[in-house]
Length: 298
Image 1 (cartoon, rainbow, N blue to C red):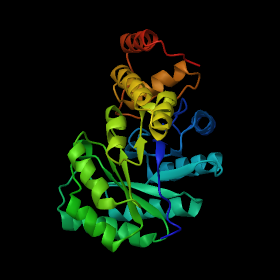
Image 2 (cartoon, helix red, strand yellow):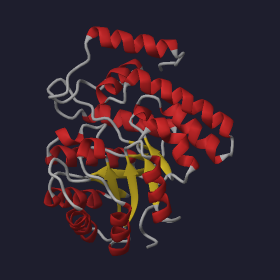
Image 3 (tube, rainbow, N blue to C red):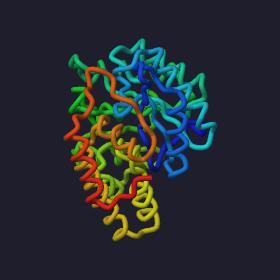
Image 4 (cartoon, rainbow, N blue to C red):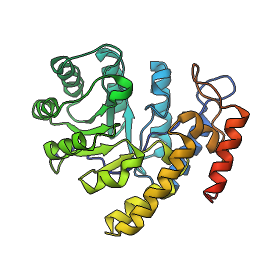
């Protein structure tokens, strides 16, 4: 399927800035898009987990996707997260993303209830069938969304809907990840969603990294990506260590990411309730941690 986009490289699940009324801050979103493009990310992913997508209304998710697509203006790829708890809402957002000109969509497994492989197959098949000309990435986050994607289910989906050409796994199970790599083949994008495993995942065939921490510090992720591509595993290893230290300070948490972005000169506003703002002592500890790493905040 020559028109279906294959995703690779550094994919940033972009933060969602809010203004003092708790609404999406359009100007800051545009500024963040430019910041990330200038730093070298390969793809933006609005309304994902890091972007508090599950706390946004459908209209807000459409608004956010439109802002990001418009501001990106074709400079890099865009994969809109459209996954919802229902198949119908997911299809609605997926069709909207396609109408905007997005390069693809990422779809979290339906959450809260437990579903077997047949139910998950029907969910993803209906979504993929609605947009046969658009790349669809399965988003597996069993720790949060409860469901797992078995290798046999992925095989069924790949056979029934060739535009399902990527999977993002946010889990430390590298054995399962390698199974996805092997099942998908060269034309399939297995994407790692655990920043501590960026280099190990690349070494077993990952096509890219989906990194929440890269909102704040895209630099080490870009350096790791480039070093690995050049065969410089020593440098790639150094960057992985830096990434691990950043993770320890920012706790893989969008609330921390937003607070740290203020230190980079791009205020994000607060999180969407029921997430809470960091307490002063938490902010102080974060700032000290970043200073101890010698990271330049600018």
